[in-house]
Structures are given as structure tokens and as C-alpha cells.
Amino acid sequence: MITRVNSPSQGNQTGVVAVRPVSRVPMLNVGDAIAVRVAKHLTDNVMRLVGGGAGGGGFQLDVEGQEMLPLGSRATLSVERGPDGPRYQVSAAPQNAAQGGAPLSAAGETAALARIASLATSLAARQDGLSPLYAGLAATLAAAPAGAAGAMLPPAVTSALAGLLGFRLDPAASREGRLDGAALRAALEALTGRGAAGGAGTGLDDALSELLSVLKDAAGGREAPARQATPPPLPAISRHPRGEKPARASGELISALLARDGEEAAAILAAKTEAALARLRLASLASRGLLADGEGAGEAALFDRVLDLPLVVGGQTAVISLQIGRDDTPGHEGEGAHPAWRLRFALDTEATGAVEALVGLDGPRLFASLWAVRPDIAADLRERLPRLAATLAEQGLEVVDLKVTGGLPDDPPAASGQFVDVVS
Image (cartoon, rainbow, N blue to C red; front, side, top):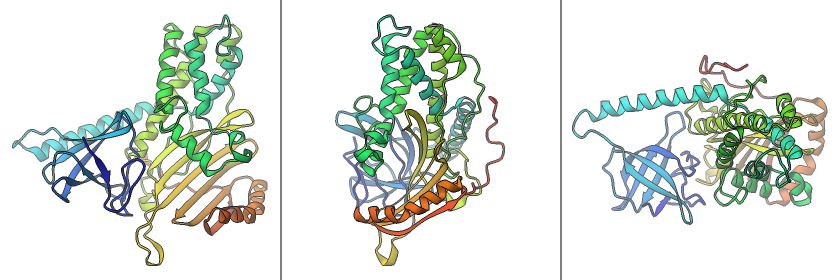
């Protein structure tokens, strides 16, 4: 069992940080298993592991309290659920000793990549956003409230549906009725299973899996009708994010609810839940650099994690698409290593139209660029910039650059023929 996972000079709440400012560290969740290689023995009980790929996507970790593995050997870093948080375990990768280890390893890696590509293709054909699911659950809970007598759906279903509401970011519930850093952080922790929403250690992925299970039981073997709407673009770490507008419940679901056909409603909701789960798993693959979403982007892909965050807008649920990553820019003016992060997100609502933001935090220095498709929204944002800069300065930040641009930034070239839309 690993007793410490860190770098020589920094600490981190997850217990995993970069060895150097230019090293990226994967966002680790319970159940993850990451291929690594032993690069160096630092002391008698501390070894340096490297993983990831070329082109700026690699990372380095120092681990202590684990059986020392030979230099150059391949291993797996796995994340398990412990009594007081994540537990990390390093195990040697299985090899056929003394018989063509390197060729077998290369063949195994090729086979693994082929399986991942097949999985990604399947997920891409089934994925859909969170917005249609939240529209469906809102309509269902309005027609069949949790705990109501004679409800058309089992209590386990309505309870699981209601539990998803806790994963939304609600500006009205924040301090002074507006979004702030603390509210965003709490929502992200809940989404990834590090907060209290849905129960201790339960993230959105777990909640959706539980919901899918009870919905399939309630559907009694029925299959949902084929989806007609076009799904949102695939999650990506190099392509620009695109927010989801609040959706309306499908006509098929409304008809089932009006007819009080619980099995049909459950089947339709199960399909929406399965599609949302497929998207979450695609986001996980993208976060590990396993989707070729930015061929031609080169070093422009400065993000390590992509995720979708439900947002309450006018009583409905929109979805913010976020990309989070460590900024690889070296320290300015000879300062050396210090925290530097980037956040890029997109929102699209009826009130604002499509909006995108890129925020960089380099120690206390803040850089931010905003884009808005609608000219009136861009003008309104420009008018608010002085007030926003003053508010940020009150928080102890040095605002270096803050600007608004009309339109949306261009994407890097898309990889040709990676996935085929077989749905729409």
C-alpha cells in the first residue's frame, strides 16, 4: 500500500502532484488504473513513475511505501476506495519473463488501444448530453412526485431522479445569489464524488449508474423508441467546449406520463440515462488523452480534464462544458515553480446565447478572455469589465488581462473519420 504520492516540493489534496511545473498529472478517481513505468529510484523506498504520452501529455509521480520495482519496468497505478479517502496501489504489469518481453508489451499495448478505440466508437454512437435527461426527470417528478401515494413509478426511481438535482450548480443557492469560486468548487467536488451531493463519495457517474439500474427494473423489459435529436459534440480537451441549452422533455415521455404508463416512462428515462453515462465515459477517455480530438492542435491542448456541469437557469437545467488543466507556462520574471492553472468553459442559454471564457491563474496573476456570439451580450460584458476587475482585485488577484471578443474562437482541425454519427 502506498503511503505517499507526491513531488519533492509540493502537496495536493488528492495526494498526487506534478514533479515539475511542465509535468501534467491525471485527475485520479476511484476505479482508475493507469499504466506507468519506473523511471528512477530516488531513495531506498521512493521511486519515480512516468506515464502518459508525448506532446505534453505525460506526467511524473513519486511514490513511497510500495515494493520497489526494477528500473524500466512497467506497472499499473490503481485507485481504490479507502475508509478515509482514495488509496493508491502500484502493481507490476504481468509479463512473460525472459521471452520477448518488449515485443509482447508492444503487442499488448496495440491490442489495448484497439479495444479503447472500439469502446469509444460505441460510446460516441450512444452518447447524449445531460440536458435532455434533466428535462425528462423534471417532467417525471412533476407528474409523479417522490413519495406520492399511488405513484406510477417505484419509490426507488423517483428517489434516484430527485437525487440528481443535487448535482446542479444553482446560483440562487450561492452567496448573494450569484456564482462564486466556492460554489463552483463545491459543485465540481460533488460531481466527481469528492463532495456531499448524492452521499459521501458518490459522484454523478455512480448516481447515474444507480438510476439506470432501477429504471431498467421498472421498465419491465421495454425498449425506448429510437432517439431523433442530434447529440452534442463529443467531449474534447483541445477543441473548444460548447454549452448545452435547457432542453424540453421529449414528446414520447410526455405521452407516457399523461397515460400514466410507468413502464414506458421508465424505458425512455433509462435510454436518456444510458446516453448521459456514455458521454461521461467519453469525457473520461478524453481526459486521459485517449480520444484523437485535436489532431493538428499540437501544444494548444493545454487541458487535462473535461466535464459537464449541470446549471440551474430559470428553473430549467442548462449544462456548462468545462476544461481544466495545469498551465505549462514557466514562472514569470525568474520566480520558478508556482501553481498555474487554466479553465475554459462554455454556456449557451436563451438569455445569453453562446458564451465562452478562458481563465488563466498564474500565482496571484489572472488572465481572462470572454467571447459572446450575440453583440448585445458582448457589449454588456464589456460594460461590466471594470466592476469585475475591481471585484477580482478585492479578492487579492492581480488582473493582468481582461477582455471581451465578439463571436467564438475557432477550433483546431478535427481528426478525419474517427467516429461516424450513426444516430442522426
